[in-house]
Amino acid sequence: MQRTEDFVGEIAQRVAIAVAPNGGRRIKVDHPAIPLTTKELAATAAACLEAGAAMIHCHVRDAEGRHILDADAYRDAISAIRRAVGERMVIQITTEAVGRYAPAEQMEAVRAVRPEAASLALRELVPDASHEEEFSRFLSFMRSENIAPQIILYHPEEAEQLKGMMARGLIPFPEIPVLYVLGRYTEGQRSNPADLLPFLDSTMPKFGHFMVCAFGQRETACVAASALLGGHARVGFENNLHLTDGSLAPDNTAIVAGAAQALATLGLKPQDADGLRADWGLGSPARGR
Image 1: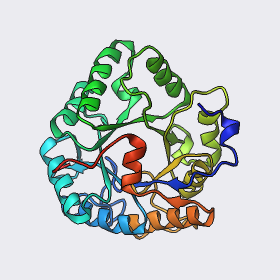
Image 2: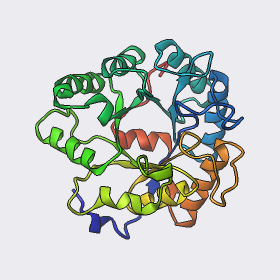
Image 3: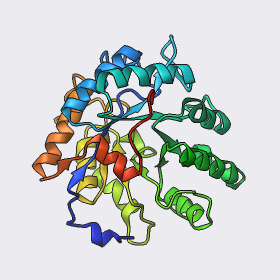
Image 4: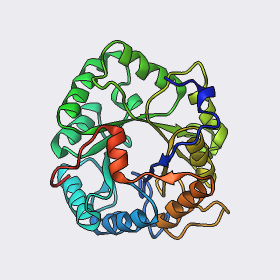
């Protein structure tokens, strides 16, 4: 594994951009262009693909706009997005609880949908040691179904927890992608590039593939810092509604395009969906996924 100092100055040849276009909380009153319906998600995916995104991180809502982990709603959204973009995007569903779901329900959503990829918040699915074995069995199911997990880590201590579980044989993947969330529990949830440094400290465990998401208008600066240190980028309305100049972004596409332009200015090339699948050990998505 590389140490932090090995990352400094190293520029990855390809950087994957994921778009997180809606999240589980924001609604139209927050921004009229937040995609909540299946049709809106598909249109957003197509536009963000052209702007440089290789993956869409997908939340679905009920008729009242509330976050749900519903297999039928996910299947409908995945089908619509596939019709819009084919296999040119990785489609990742969320298992986020948003205060509504227990760990068993979160894992059952993945078992029912069998998506191409799913994000898993370690603190939600393994709130204490008594949940470790069930989580390990769940990851074994994901591996057997060729579903890519991405473990969400909000604090460096969680990275240590995950690496400890790997050392004890509880994670049935030789490497597992992670997402570092910057600034989630800071005042005002406004992230800065320096928030990444504790995750990449020389004393911290390292992961073969990491992505970063951030809150507020310094989102692009945060993901650019991540890319320069060997990571990848997740951007969009889930965590940020603003462009780098502080103005309200017209839509998710503008945020993705801004991130792509910033990375290109730094000499970084975009990763496409097939490249991301290869990085994550995935083949082509099965029909309906």
